[in-house]
Length: 258
Image: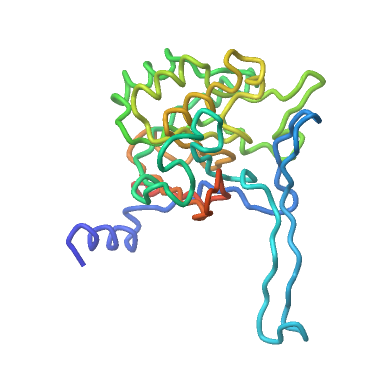
């Protein structure tokens, strides 16, 4: 084992490095994004037992699962959006594995989101963060802490009113700035990387439109971002290697200083 990997192993064993799980549990109660009825809906999670130490399989337990690619804590590949459909390496089976790992920059707007569920991340918030913590490096995962994952019910989490969903997210101009920083991707605690009202923006869903059009990735329905420092963590987000996959449930792990 090389010295650097041996040091990492020792740091994990001694607690100098902590592994923080940024993943929500995945099951039948996991909230799924809702779409207007003119569009095909994404199914929630369901499973069916194949055998459970019984006559169908006396020594083993396993199940089939059924769900949309973008269910629960999940990874968005560039091909998920029309702007990314013709890019190279745009599907889950073609994304280089090295691009699933990157440093984390955590931007904290949880107080603003608590006061206004439609709060939008603007360039001035990013620039203020950079003034304190340094320029966002190329290849970083930018994670938006809103504490939205702490909402207890699906109704509170999706926060859908008579006029549609109300959840925080990035403004078009903020996404443009992050793309100019050549980030690896953008991650959120809400059900999708765009704000709840983003279907009414111009262009609609700017985070999906610009990020995926630039070959960047998305992470949605994260949790435990309050346990990460603004900088200094390393994020590993490895989706299933689905052929032609547009996305996948993902176990997102962060390595942080103990």
